[in-house]
View 1 (cartoon, rainbow, N blue to C red):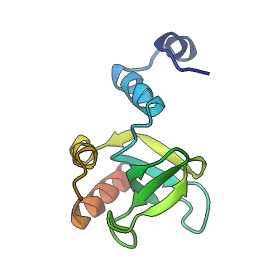
View 2 (cartoon, rainbow, N blue to C red):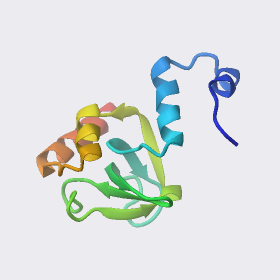
View 3 (cartoon, helix red, strand yellow):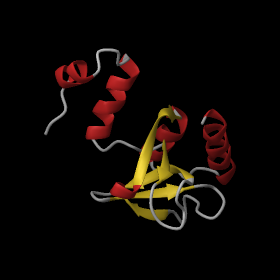
View 4 (cartoon, rainbow, N blue to C red):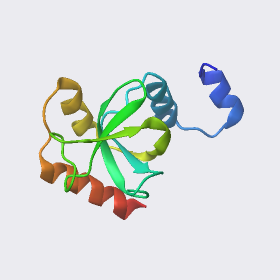
Length: 116
């Protein structure tokens, strides 16, 4: 089922422009820089930054055990995107193929945890 703005309006009339843009990007598989929570596995309920993606998998970093150089490979079904939080600066760097410093990832994860 393909997502359209009309379907979004029908399901929830109070969606903001930001949420609509996010949903468009979600369907285009543009999740780089988004924050995600692990739903399954030994790392359940842990917050990560999405640093890479494939058809069925995403690559996650938390800045401590998993970094951009050694990300965690996780099935898309086993994560939940945190819609409220996405750092555009991190996303832009990832789209350009640049590596992100570990301290930035740790800072983003901590900021996301404080908001939850």
